[in-house]
Length: 185
Image (tube, rainbow, N blue to C red):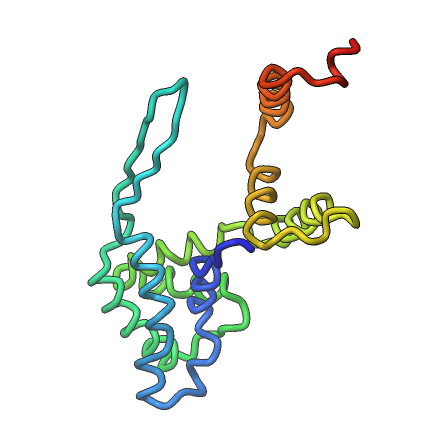
């Protein structure tokens, strides 16, 4: 119902948990897809557009990592972690040691690690989604198709000033046709 978010799940590759169990070919290939996703997002300009008072505005942020250097660093880091037997039980400890002993070799990966270690990973969004779904799908409305349900959920989740929007929509709806319920008042 919601688009998949591969970006957050791609950060898990930075924990490097299975690297000591991989042969050299598997080690070389380990995490390349996830690193491509991270490089695609953080290695390109990001432009955000929004409307404010009927004017479209935008903001562009520069890439925070160099894609080519990040991929080279990734290939080297895996070998360093295996060779130096860095602990991989705790991601924070792994990257703390990497920072302490190799911060000059892996600046781009350390940037990604800081992002991974500071991103809020929780289930509140999922729980909120199920709560909204339960409000929308009732016994009387249990046959909504997936697209309609998804649109209704997005509106309910995204609208901060929901009451203002509902009031405006209700007044437009009342004016579009004479309605008996409102003619009595």
